[in-house]
Every structure is written in C-alpha cells, then in structure tokens.
Amino acid sequence: MHIHLDFGQRRWLVLGMVTAPLLIAGNVNATPILQPDGWAYVYEDFSNTSNSNNWWYYASCNQVAHGTTDGNAPNTQYKTFGQASRPGYCGPRTLDGNQFFRFITMPFDRRDAVVTYNADGSVASDNWNEMDDGKGGSEMRSRQTYYAYDGITNKRGWDDLGVNYLAPTNTVRFSWKFRLYNVSMLKRDANGDKLAASAVVGQFHSQNIPECNRNYTYEDGFSPAPGLDVRVDPGPDGSEHVYFKLFTKIRNSQVPSGVQKCSQADADANKICQVTLWEQSFPIANVTRVDSADTHVPPWISISYVMRPSVTNGALKFLFGVEGSSDQALNYQVRPLGSAGSNQSFLRMPMTQNDCPNRPFVGSYVLGYNRKYYGYLHGDAAHYVPKRTDQQPWPSVWVHPNLLGNAHLKSYIDGTWAPGDYPPQFIVDYDDFRIVQVPQLP
Image (cartoon, rainbow, N blue to C red; front, side, top):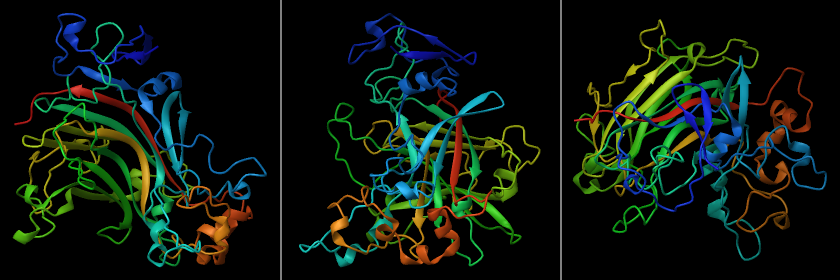
C-alpha cells in the first residue's frame, strides 16, 4: 500500500494500492500529469516513518549505529568510534514535536573502499592509500518506481523515467531543509589536522536506465547535475567559517560563460571537470553548533534546485539560505551563479547525461580523508576478505598507526574518553523535501 501526503497540511492520507508497472495519466483519467505551477508532485516531512519507507530507499544507512553487540562478530569493541562495515547511521528524530531525518557519520566509516591483492595475499603496492578515496556517510534516494502515482489519480510520486513531470521540456524545483548539527569531523584540531576535508549534503546522480533513453552511452564520472559541498576553514577575518560550494561535473566545452573552466586549452575541450558554480562562507556559529558543548540549535537552511533535466536545453537556478534571517547575506534568496565574477541568476548548461532526470540523493557523506590517519593497511593478510573491506575486524588492520598513537583519538576506540566528550562527527538533519512544478526557466 502506498501512503501519501495531503501536502496542504502536515498529515498523511492512506490511499489505494497501485500495481501496474507503468502508468500514464491518460490511462486513468483525462487529467494530464503536468500540474499547475506550485503543485507538489512529492512532499515529505518525515512525520511518519512507515510512510517515508514507501518513498525512500535507504541506500547506505545503517540503522544500528556503528558496530555490533555480538561478541563473536567483528568490530564489537569499537562500536562507539565507527566501523568498516557500514558507512553511517540515519534515522528519524523528534525535537519540539517536529520529526526530521538525522544522518550521522563518525570517523573511519567506509564506502567504496576497494583493495587489490597480490597473489600471495599482500596488498598491491599501488593500493596502499586506496581506502583514503572511499566515502564515509549515509544517504537515501527515491524508491525507484517507473510510474507517478497517488493511488487514485496517478498524479503524485516519483517520476524516475522522466515521462511525466521530469521530462526535459519541463522545469521543476527540488527543495528541502537541512541543519548542520555537528561538523567536528571537518574542523582542525590543536595540531592543525582535519580528519576529513569536506562533505556533500545534497546531490543528484545520473541514472543508468535504458527505459528512459535506449540510445545513450553512459559515461562514468560525467555527472552534469548540482551538488552542495561543505567545509570548515578560516574566513576573511581569520575566524572559523563554514564554506558552502555548489558544483557540477561537466565537460570543459560545456562550461557556460562566466564560469571558470578547468582548462582553457582547446585540447581539453572534452575533459570532464568539477566546476564551481557558487561559493560563500558564513561564521560557523551562524550555521551550526560550534562544538559538542554548544547548546544552541543551529538554523534550518533551505535549498532549492530549479532544474530542467536536458542535455541540450538544460537550465539551473539555485536558492539558498535561512528563511526570515535578519542577516541579509544568510537570508534565503536566489544565489548568483558563476565563479568568474558574473552575477547570473540562472545558467544554461547540461543538467543530465542522457535526457533522463537526475536522481536526488538526500543525506551526507564525507570526502577527503586525512592520510595521516586513514587509508593504511597492514597486519596479517589472513584477516582480509579479498576485495572486501567491510569485513575487516580490528582497527589495527584498517587504520593508520598514527591513529593508535594519538591518545585522544584512541580513547574513542577503547572507551576511556572523558564524560561529555564525543568522537569527531558530521551530523546533518533533513526535513520538508518536495518536488514542485514551477514556471519555465528561459
């Protein structure tokens, strides 16, 4: 049974069951699938977990937060610090009557960390640092269905194939709120070290779906869709700031005017490069808790991606900020796009790889592990499961010796840290996700 929201109020309605594999609006009634501007095809406030399960696929969330209670299983004595087997924890939380979804990443969570072995079982020399290239975090994406639905009128729900409201001729707005609850994994310690360089808090991925377009060539690494990156670094006044960066990955020849290319060389026209579309920093206290002892609740930050998912006629507008903020720089507003000094409110550029709509990934994952502590494999090769790092049992096998030599970090493993102290974390809350029909971008 599909359960959906009457989006005019914060309550859910249980509607009928849909079993057809592919339904188009005309098959049910004469009402076209494309709705008036302002109509929400998807609205999710996470107020009901069972309903959320019908909307979302939890791609990399571990509902048991780090480790296991089974004394015979790997990682049992290190469950507080993190684990190699799953990338992060996510689940519903409630504060002041408002339910939202919380994503927690702790140090040494793993994803996509593949190790190559020699014939004798040792790790290949060119792979010693490959775990450093993994991503730690948790995320969820739309539960893949090949039709739009609301149980009766066939007009509300996901449209993964783009045959209805996500068609390359339409413009829609993806929007949600997020809150940076803890960014200590991204902050420098007394020695100037970070455990990780940055984190992504909202991204779209290209889809490999033949039913959408059977005449495309899928190209790995080419992802012409926006993502939002977060890092912590000194600001203009030298104090800690949170930097937000909107980026995408497109070919050099497709970079629009006013946006800095990866290379100006004609020979690099087809080079796939990550380009910055917008970046701005804010004092850390304005957008997050400063540390675990800080009791103030950080503000909800609203983001909106207004997108037309087309290769040849793609367009993007981006809105970001805290609604109603008295700080005009932080207040929710259209953000100018263009890293070369332009002040454009929208950009024309590819917004998909193959005229299929890009799939939203809501959640967070951490990038840029510090090789001083990450990505080092040593010990008895018999501990390894070939090409699988998610079953490595002990930190002495899958972390750098510098971690075990750092008394503060090691204390999180052996449980000797002082009461009130917490391991470095990256915690992000999400609420009010929606997809809305909007007027066409030019």
